[in-house]
Amino acid sequence: MKLLASVTLAGALALSAPVLAQDMDLTVLPPVENGYQPAQTPWGEPDFRGGWPIDHLNSRTPLERSPDHGNRIFFTDEEYAEQQEQVAALEARYENEDSSDAMGMGHWAEMGGANRRTSFIVAPANGRLPAKTAEGERLSALMRSSWRQGQTFNHWTDFDSWDRCITRGLPASMLPMMYNNGIRIFQAPGLVAIQLEMIHEVRIIPTDGRAAVPRQIAQWMGDSRAHWEDANTLVVETTNFRPGASATNVVTSGSPPNNDTPISTRAKLVEYFHMTGADTITYDFTYDDPEIFTQPWAVRLNWQRDDDYQHFEYACHEGNVQIRNYITASRAARAAAE
Image (cartoon, rainbow, N blue to C red; front, side, top):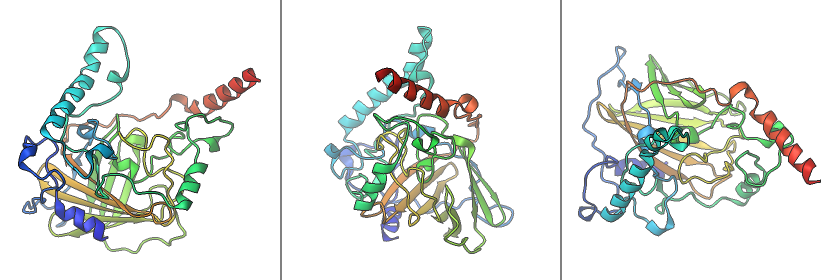
């Protein structure tokens, strides 16, 4: 909890703010503006309702920081200029493909604008996932996924929960990816609901002080309870995770590539949704799974309101034939080799 508190108080610079790096300490997040008073719902709670898609954060900012950047949270001016050029080239892929009657990643990936952040992880200080425990390494080696290189397929157990269109799990589902980044917040008396475009999961989060469910009841997205802190901050604590999903997801830039970050029943996620303006939320989380990681790790994202963003069907894979096709193709390849 101390880790999350220290990160939350540090605050966030708007990701695309035109600030010269030479004028700031690149290893420190500026303080959060805490003076904004959001409107209230008819029943007297801070009103966070609306569309908060995070597609603007899909801009090559990695989950884990490159070791070359050390403890620097922000790029230098020169690095930022280079980042802008690279993102502009990626943004041009759609028109380039369209003009040549081609279809590739330009038609698939939704790019946001460049920003100054070197990583989404802000703690530990090096911006990288902590080392796994011995048990974490053991469980990671047992995980199966279509993203794991060199793997064969014989059964549905050779696939992860995302392959099977069940869930991306937490905290992975709250991180940006190449597409379907829609997030909506709904509220009712004593309740907050967070709708995710990817797989169309909805997190139902009571805010009325009710007790958590018994620890024996495990769920893919855990069991969440929330309370309002100050006049502009929602704090959500989630436990009761069901093992099986990966805590990180390969399509979040700079994530481990094999969808093999285990989740244990001891995992706990603490999230802070801090409204800093009518159209901005600073989103922090600390994820602590002592069975898997040697220490907690924390992320900061800056959300922007976009009530015009539309959620479309996420069919996952057409006709639910992907698992069968992987298995059939894998068996055929092995038979041909023999």
